Image (cartoon, rainbow, N blue to C red; front, top):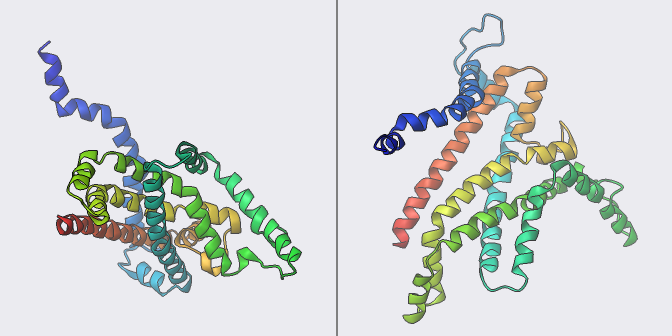
Length: 289
């Protein structure tokens, strides 16, 4: 009986249980990424000579890479704030005594269980050249629009991203709202607290959740490549040509050096953004207190 509590406290036991996941993470993520960092500073010859930052310099000089990087930056910087504000507004509405809120909670979760291919098929049936939207335009006497080969493609992908991922972020924020003790709001009501006082209480306790949701939204914005690829193919319109398109094309042409260099830069950019978010969280909590 004395041995069992000791084993529970022993970190070796924990490592044994975690070993399968840690080994898989090392084999499929950490080791390939380290190998990619090595490839990024070598040339493409069989001898694999060390070339330093030459691959990164060529990458930055590439017009295709700069276009992909700018489009990715634009999409993330626009979609993530819209996602956060929309998810926060919906979650606060669902957390109140709203009519048919149970039905609304279910409806926001439904896009999560729909396969990506099915979603893309619906979007194509709406926005392709012979789709429902152009038929509606013709009915009103307006000219057709080639949605996926124009600047409208950017906004279509943005709306698709919001529609598909809003429910997941609403669930996360709703869980954070429900963890806030009701006593604080009751005290605010007793002391004749204003709406700003209640909002301040909400934001102080919800900040860690919002930071986590922001990180997940950034990751989701990079994963929108799946939908974009199925909608428009390898070489879509310039407005939706993103870093994942560039890396996918480099992989198809077996240009491993540029592929790995682009991947390293993307990881560094995500790491920088996440670090800034955590710093902003600490500053905000100290400011609100």
